[in-house]
Image (cartoon, rainbow, N blue to C red; front, side, top):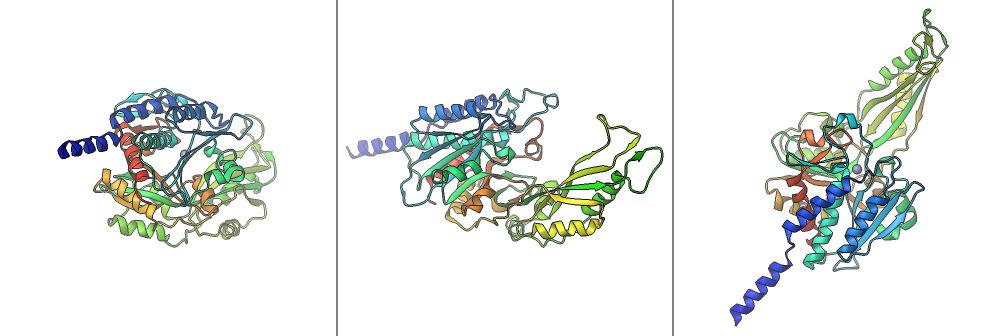
Length: 438
Ligand SMILES: [Zn+2]
């Protein structure tokens, strides 16, 4: 009798484990369908994407809420899974419905086909960040099916326009429905696992705890118009060229950031040398636009009276952007040139990596990647996390997949894709995290 009882208990315990084969097939299917919805931003019409998530969540016993936030179909979704201890503030899982546009000619497959080929799922948003959205949703479904209550409430927010600054997405939710998404912790995109990008030959999972400050400057030069046949000293294009050369050669005096120092110690071998590691270690400037000329198309024989460029400056957390701009102006030092700030950088600081959630993340990752180094890191680009850090939430960024350089490079680029095996493993990492203690 006792043996039978034991067997029954074992059977019950086994039954509580999610049916991973079914769940992984489900997630793959869902992601393919999700990629086929062209939720391109602009205009960030995310109604269809939100309806897909809504119906899948309802099918599995959740009660999602839909928020129409903008005039062009911008739509956000919030869903909550109650946890064991409701006195603790929730963990917010953050993902976004919108994707950046595509250059169809540059793709070898249909960017909105959700194709499975060569062990990858292909399509715009696979990496940024429909894949993670589906991992979040599937992990919630897995918890529900297994009857597992997370340690605290888990709230998932899928937003409509992360790719154009979140006006109708995260910022709209913060301004109008903050109580629905208020949390102690946030898990967003940002960090990732890699064997080559951070340290050659070593598996490192970087968890983003902070990001650089996006500081866009418009530089305008004024000169005198004239005939191209007769060169003049105050040619606006030439004034601009010299100004740009000076601005872009500002020596980077920023000290090593403490998070980068911590990364170095944790990784234990010299960091890889590439554009990504370069960007997380210093202030950077990219020349992104140039505009000049008279007429459309601009005439080759007319010297224009004005010429302008934008530079995309990314400053390390803690760097004073006003001082940086003053330095740009001082270096240019030309009354015919103006420097204008066209984005307002946010610097809410770094999220503390010494928390129970960070430890739980580390364990969940290392359960599936036993030899991985898990370290806090900075990311060079902006995410929605910055707006939540400003509200005092502890925000970490993690794509729980091991990506090689070529795959990671498809974000916002052509041939975007993720490895199927890593996509599946990422669901289990989220599941193991959400059922652990934090
Ligand atoms: Zn994204």
